[in-house]
Length: 179
Image 1 (cartoon, helix red, strand yellow):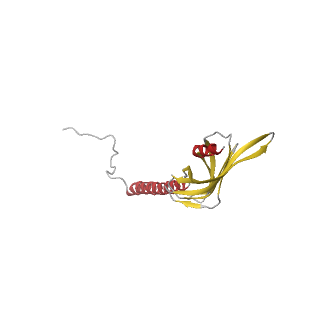
Image 2 (image 1 turned 90 degrees about the vertical axis):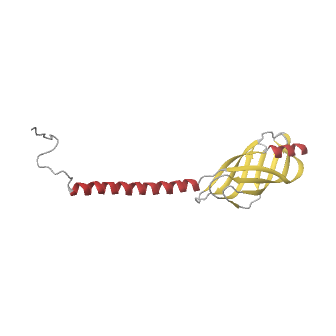
């Protein structure tokens, strides 16, 4: 009869791992689990903060209640510039995931200015608010888009100005009728 000798095994070695080795493995697995849980919690809080500071706004000119004082001339350098001053409305839509508090809005371009009437408004996520605005456009102004700055406080509590491109073509069309 033939006897087999296992060369991987030391003579007299135990077949089960020692208790100290098992405890070390269990402690390492427990530390790994705790680290993963803490990392996941930290990532979740970071994502909440990022979502709270994410802002997405859309601004839409509104011609309802459009009131103007007609065309007025002004001397600028060596020429006369004709401009239209009107009171209108701007709808601000919050397309972001968190509410924002809009403190004001304004736009400046050569030949065009826009300022709000001065009252703040809280806008819920996917909500909107209408703002009274004062618009001045020179009769020669032709750009259909201007970049407005919306001054706001986001859900994270950060105060900042957010640039938003506004299509002012509806206002320009109305103003050109007066020019």
